Image (cartoon, rainbow, N blue to C red; front, side, top):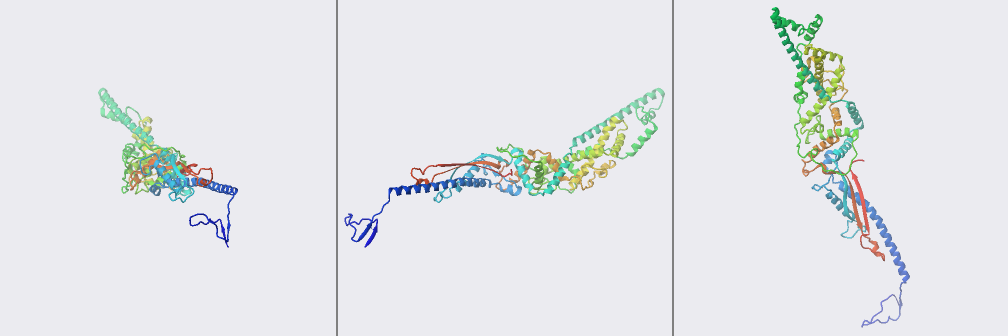
Length: 554
């Protein structure tokens, strides 16, 4: 006996349906309409739930892909800019010429397309998220706001390399010297006034002699007195008939004898100030860098591309850190940079000249002017030095009175302050400290020997307090505008990087430090195609994401 479930009916040789063999038990089965509808409903619920889970996954996938794609865009920073200078920036043009940012956006879109639907060609993913577009809505460049983003990044780099105690010490030193003023113009004016007074003295003496000679000739004609003897008597008496008491005459003779053989410092100092300051400051064996910087197409000179984002400004501590960054990455006189476009980058930021020698010279003159002011303050507080200058001025003015003696006295004090300042700078360039305002004991030069004081081997005595050359650079840094500090730094960095193979056309005003990106995605249903009365085709899901990125710490 044979049992068969839902068999096919046997057929005869003609293909007609026949009877089942005898002894065969046949069972015929089927489903009801209710069962079918129930099954369809359960499958619809299952596929709808599956599609709902997929929608949740699509949302999370949009966030993940946007994050990864944005990071991929900003991972294309200029490597040598980071390794050599600690600065991060992405080339907006992708080494091309299009400054709209489209090339960079296209790279981000390509990455997102690969990440969103990696197996689209072989059909192995159920997410099937398609990236439609990537647009850069706003961006900031390293050169924006006078290079403020670059300077903030430089400050962050320097902060990683400087201990907190050292930063505090340097901050205190610079704050201590902030009140130092530039007195070069006042010193020069005092010297000019003194020189003019000396010329007036000479004219006055010539006039007196002419008057005395005329008086002597008149007296000789009327009284028969020898003209030359009479003239000598008048001049000895003080000129033009002036009568002197024996005490005054003795005083003047003593003053004149005291300053015999002492050179007039006013023309001497005016001659020194006309010379190359480095010849006065540096020893013969000191080698000054002769590097020069090409002046064409400098960041600080050309018209720059502009971003449309704004970075926060610099804090006072940031400015101090920028000085430390310049010293370590751009070089300075005490530690020249061998590989850079200039060896004294810090001095370039201060002076902006196109050669190391000219930058060092300009920086030295700025510091000299500050030292002149402080030494003039010191000398004005010293009554002994003022009395010496007054005594010498009376002799140089031929005792012509206060109207001529006072400007000569002040010029002598200015000349003396200049010589002392030169000695100070020699000490600074030797790595020593110099007190801001000197005491009587710390003063090096003497009025009687100013010429000898300018000998090459002479310099101020080192001190355990005061400021060194580095601190004076810091003071000068505080006088710089953000634009000069930032763009001049980028001058040097760009010029150096352009010497590298593959970076010959790099431009700092095309390097992005921050951007706001917008992404658009779409996806089609997958599981809804199994659900009756719901179309599984078309792009039912559209997504938009925005992502901001910045190398700066906000």
